[in-house]
Length: 420
Image 1 (cartoon, rainbow, N blue to C red):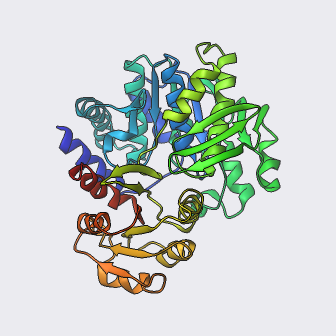
Image 2 (image 1 turned 90 degrees about the horizontal axis):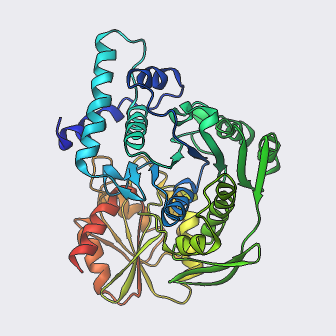
């Protein structure tokens, strides 16, 4: 298969859904000579913030001079974003090579009557291990797909885990993980084999986390300033800056700071305060409150597509854009809680340029307008996200926020590039 065929193949595999458990991934990795063995891992789980913490740590370790493999999901702009070396997506040829190797074994398993066949996520996990082994990575930042205990990434040997990080816990995937915070926390906690780094959370959650062999709790950062350029804050007496937006990013950064301190003690001696400060400021995370300067305006791309993500976006807007005129570009999937998303955003919404998300799951623009008219007095329909963003770039706003679905961000980014 060539690159296009590989990505189409994986897209087709994703239609078979999610299946938790380690037996199938173990069987697949056995066929591939267990490429996960011998690498060193930082394992990251949680409901929100996993990607940002992985991005911070990747940047810290890269600037410190280590070769870092990072496996995360979902991708926003390119399939290759799942597989990073020193924070950069690998090229098409490498994706093609490793997907072909994994797909070949899956097809053999099918022919040989295997009781269960690997899911797309299990195949991508195996491909990542092959890549990181061949690249001789000094360390791997490994983000869980869902949960932890039975997530495919938890196949790595306990002795190869340097530490585990668990970000904020909230209700998500309850059909798989349980319908109480305690049950969800227990599933996330399943990745922990030695040191756990987290922060103080709900007592129901902490009752689980306190069982860790070694528990490191990040402290509450203290913000000193917040502008559209980013955030400045102090943590344990030291000063840090972030270019990423949102108060929640200070908490994510605090987890990365504590992880960096622990990794230094474990032998990654190039890590120091200056490296951490530089890395935190230089970190960005595609499609998550990502900002661009276009035609004298700030454009913010955020994949907020559920009420929780919308609340985070709203809070960031209030923090960074007070007394600033804002326009919004919005598109959404028809199977999402659109009222919930817009309710979370209602006290900041102004002019909205709306369009159908460019996918069969996208809600048609007339139905979308019916929702949006309840929350904005100025809703303008458009034939595409590109048209919507171009109109927003020509109005008298200072900031344009694009949100509602990860699927609309790719077209928005292409439009940003066209506008220079």
